[in-house]
Length: 193
Image (cartoon, rainbow, N blue to C red; front, side, top):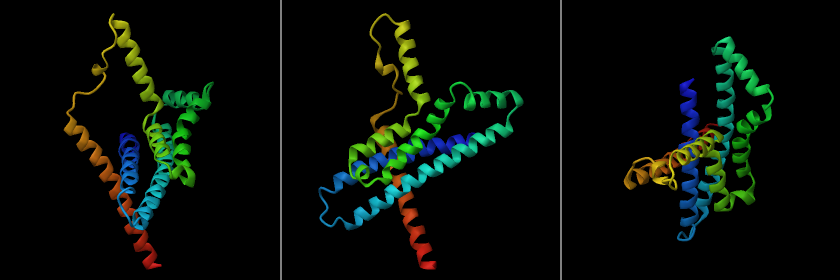
Protein backbone atom coordinates (compact mmCIF):
# COMPACT_ATOMS: atom_id res chain seq x y z
CA UNK A 1 0.00 0.00 0.00
CA UNK A 2 2.86 2.37 0.75
CA UNK A 3 4.25 1.73 -2.74
CA UNK A 4 0.99 2.89 -4.29
CA UNK A 5 0.99 6.02 -2.13
CA UNK A 6 4.60 6.70 -3.12
CA UNK A 7 3.77 6.26 -6.82
CA UNK A 8 0.80 8.64 -6.53
CA UNK A 9 2.97 11.18 -4.71
CA UNK A 10 5.68 10.94 -7.39
CA UNK A 11 3.09 11.53 -10.09
CA UNK A 12 1.53 14.43 -8.21
CA UNK A 13 4.60 16.25 -6.97
CA UNK A 14 7.33 15.36 -9.43
CA UNK A 15 5.83 14.68 -12.84
CA UNK A 16 2.92 17.14 -12.80
CA UNK A 17 4.97 19.95 -11.25
CA UNK A 18 7.69 19.06 -13.77
CA UNK A 19 5.10 19.59 -16.50
CA UNK A 20 4.30 23.06 -15.13
CA UNK A 21 7.98 23.98 -15.03
CA UNK A 22 8.51 22.47 -18.49
CA UNK A 23 5.61 24.61 -19.75
CA UNK A 24 7.36 27.73 -18.51
CA UNK A 25 10.53 26.68 -20.33
CA UNK A 26 8.56 25.79 -23.45
CA UNK A 27 6.78 29.12 -23.69
CA UNK A 28 10.05 30.95 -22.96
CA UNK A 29 11.90 29.04 -25.67
CA UNK A 30 9.22 29.87 -28.25
CA UNK A 31 10.40 33.46 -28.08
CA UNK A 32 13.96 32.59 -29.10
CA UNK A 33 13.69 29.61 -31.48
CA UNK A 34 12.97 30.29 -35.14
CA UNK A 35 12.12 26.73 -36.24
CA UNK A 36 9.27 25.79 -33.94
CA UNK A 37 8.06 22.58 -35.59
CA UNK A 38 10.13 20.12 -33.53
CA UNK A 39 9.53 21.86 -30.24
CA UNK A 40 5.77 22.07 -30.92
CA UNK A 41 5.69 18.36 -31.74
CA UNK A 42 7.55 17.65 -28.50
CA UNK A 43 5.09 19.84 -26.61
CA UNK A 44 2.15 18.04 -28.18
CA UNK A 45 3.62 14.74 -26.97
CA UNK A 46 4.24 16.29 -23.53
CA UNK A 47 0.58 17.24 -23.25
CA UNK A 48 -0.44 13.74 -24.35
CA UNK A 49 1.84 12.25 -21.72
CA UNK A 50 0.38 14.34 -18.92
CA UNK A 51 -3.15 13.37 -20.00
CA UNK A 52 -2.17 9.68 -20.04
CA UNK A 53 -0.55 10.11 -16.64
CA UNK A 54 -3.84 11.53 -15.38
CA UNK A 55 -5.65 8.38 -16.55
CA UNK A 56 -2.91 6.22 -15.00
CA UNK A 57 -3.28 8.20 -11.77
CA UNK A 58 -7.02 7.41 -11.72
CA UNK A 59 -6.34 3.72 -12.34
CA UNK A 60 -3.74 3.53 -9.57
CA UNK A 61 -6.00 5.42 -7.16
CA UNK A 62 -8.94 3.09 -7.77
CA UNK A 63 -6.67 0.04 -7.59
CA UNK A 64 -5.18 1.31 -4.32
CA UNK A 65 -8.61 1.87 -2.81
CA UNK A 66 -9.80 -1.61 -3.81
CA UNK A 67 -6.57 -3.14 -2.50
CA UNK A 68 -6.93 -1.22 0.76
CA UNK A 69 -10.51 -2.40 1.17
CA UNK A 70 -9.67 -6.07 0.70
CA UNK A 71 -6.51 -6.08 2.81
CA UNK A 72 -7.79 -4.35 5.95
CA UNK A 73 -9.82 -5.47 8.92
CA UNK A 74 -13.63 -5.48 9.03
CA UNK A 75 -13.69 -2.27 11.10
CA UNK A 76 -11.56 -0.39 8.59
CA UNK A 77 -13.65 -1.77 5.75
CA UNK A 78 -16.77 -0.37 7.41
CA UNK A 79 -15.03 2.98 7.91
CA UNK A 80 -14.03 3.01 4.25
CA UNK A 81 -17.60 2.26 3.15
CA UNK A 82 -18.91 5.00 5.44
CA UNK A 83 -16.48 7.52 3.98
CA UNK A 84 -17.03 6.50 0.35
CA UNK A 85 -20.80 6.00 0.49
CA UNK A 86 -21.88 7.73 3.68
CA UNK A 87 -23.36 11.14 4.32
CA UNK A 88 -20.57 13.06 2.57
CA UNK A 89 -19.99 10.60 -0.27
CA UNK A 90 -19.81 13.40 -2.83
CA UNK A 91 -16.78 14.95 -1.09
CA UNK A 92 -14.91 11.65 -1.37
CA UNK A 93 -15.64 11.32 -5.08
CA UNK A 94 -14.95 15.00 -5.80
CA UNK A 95 -11.57 14.66 -4.13
CA UNK A 96 -10.94 11.50 -6.13
CA UNK A 97 -12.10 12.69 -9.55
CA UNK A 98 -11.45 16.45 -9.54
CA UNK A 99 -7.68 16.28 -10.19
CA UNK A 100 -8.14 13.72 -12.96
CA UNK A 101 -10.90 15.69 -14.68
CA UNK A 102 -8.79 18.80 -14.30
CA UNK A 103 -5.75 17.26 -15.98
CA UNK A 104 -7.96 15.95 -18.80
CA UNK A 105 -8.73 19.57 -19.68
CA UNK A 106 -5.33 19.61 -21.39
CA UNK A 107 -6.96 17.67 -24.23
CA UNK A 108 -8.69 20.93 -25.21
CA UNK A 109 -6.51 22.88 -27.62
CA UNK A 110 -7.52 26.29 -26.28
CA UNK A 111 -6.41 25.40 -22.73
CA UNK A 112 -3.25 23.68 -23.93
CA UNK A 113 -2.14 26.84 -25.78
CA UNK A 114 -1.88 29.12 -22.72
CA UNK A 115 0.79 28.94 -20.04
CA UNK A 116 -1.42 30.22 -17.24
CA UNK A 117 -3.94 27.39 -17.69
CA UNK A 118 -1.16 24.80 -17.62
CA UNK A 119 0.33 26.18 -14.44
CA UNK A 120 -3.03 26.49 -12.69
CA UNK A 121 -4.02 22.94 -13.64
CA UNK A 122 -0.69 21.54 -12.48
CA UNK A 123 -0.75 23.37 -9.16
CA UNK A 124 -4.34 22.39 -8.39
CA UNK A 125 -3.48 18.78 -9.24
CA UNK A 126 -0.40 18.86 -7.00
CA UNK A 127 -2.07 20.49 -4.01
CA UNK A 128 -4.57 18.07 -2.53
CA UNK A 129 -7.44 18.80 -0.19
CA UNK A 130 -5.52 17.22 2.70
CA UNK A 131 -2.54 19.54 2.10
CA UNK A 132 -4.81 22.58 2.07
CA UNK A 133 -6.39 21.48 5.36
CA UNK A 134 -2.97 20.89 6.91
CA UNK A 135 -1.81 24.37 5.90
CA UNK A 136 -4.98 25.99 7.23
CA UNK A 137 -4.87 24.08 10.51
CA UNK A 138 -1.15 24.80 10.94
CA UNK A 139 -1.82 28.47 10.37
CA UNK A 140 -4.75 28.51 12.80
CA UNK A 141 -2.92 26.56 15.53
CA UNK A 142 0.09 28.81 15.16
CA UNK A 143 -2.15 31.84 15.46
CA UNK A 144 -3.79 30.46 18.59
CA UNK A 145 -0.52 29.95 20.44
CA UNK A 146 1.11 33.28 19.62
CA UNK A 147 -0.10 36.71 20.44
CA UNK A 148 1.87 38.35 17.64
CA UNK A 149 1.28 38.05 13.95
CA UNK A 150 2.26 34.65 12.58
CA UNK A 151 5.78 34.11 11.42
CA UNK A 152 5.41 32.49 8.02
CA UNK A 153 9.05 31.40 7.97
CA UNK A 154 8.17 28.78 10.57
CA UNK A 155 5.97 27.03 7.98
CA UNK A 156 8.79 26.75 5.45
CA UNK A 157 11.30 23.91 5.59
CA UNK A 158 14.89 24.86 6.32
CA UNK A 159 16.43 24.34 2.87
CA UNK A 160 18.84 26.36 0.80
CA UNK A 161 18.17 28.00 -2.55
CA UNK A 162 20.49 25.49 -4.23
CA UNK A 163 18.37 22.60 -2.96
CA UNK A 164 15.24 24.29 -4.32
CA UNK A 165 16.85 24.85 -7.74
CA UNK A 166 18.17 21.29 -7.79
CA UNK A 167 14.74 19.93 -6.90
CA UNK A 168 13.00 21.99 -9.59
CA UNK A 169 15.56 20.96 -12.23
CA UNK A 170 15.10 17.34 -11.21
CA UNK A 171 11.34 17.63 -11.73
CA UNK A 172 11.75 19.15 -15.20
CA UNK A 173 14.32 16.53 -16.20
CA UNK A 174 12.14 13.70 -14.89
CA UNK A 175 9.21 14.94 -16.94
CA UNK A 176 11.30 15.48 -20.08
CA UNK A 177 12.86 12.01 -19.76
CA UNK A 178 9.34 10.60 -19.49
CA UNK A 179 8.39 12.36 -22.73
CA UNK A 180 11.57 11.14 -24.47
CA UNK A 181 10.84 7.56 -23.42
CA UNK A 182 7.26 7.95 -24.66
CA UNK A 183 8.51 9.24 -28.04
CA UNK A 184 11.05 6.44 -28.33
CA UNK A 185 8.48 3.75 -27.52
CA UNK A 186 5.98 5.30 -29.92
CA UNK A 187 8.52 5.29 -32.75
CA UNK A 188 9.65 1.76 -31.88
CA UNK A 189 6.08 0.44 -31.95
CA UNK A 190 5.17 2.20 -35.21
CA UNK A 191 8.27 0.77 -36.90
CA UNK A 192 7.33 -2.75 -35.78
CA UNK A 193 3.79 -2.48 -37.09
